[in-house]
Length: 149
Image (cartoon, rainbow, N blue to C red; front, top):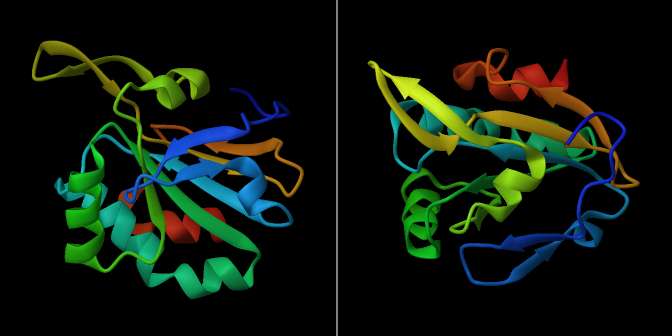
């Protein structure tokens, strides 16, 4: 997925098993952020930054939606533990990750594996990707501020 591309209509299922569609956010900008794993330090910092600035994001016309490969039960625990005011997509088959190009080979401590590359897509009111915050650019502790700048 690149700047100028149209995002897919069906995004996946949230923590409640409800199908989430791009058209659910019509008239709003969508912050679609892909993160590696619930309950990890970086992912928690990122989610809490978005939570703490959620009112400012909404005032600026944004809605927030997180995506990771954990299941609904994991997402529910993550939302409850950190009181997240937005939904999380359970992309267990990583189809949405693949559609957006965020699924790929990673390397940690010399160990190679496949996983989600932390990336945020800002999708405009017409469903077009207008900004991408790449894995090297994402600052988890101040992620909301990055989006609002």
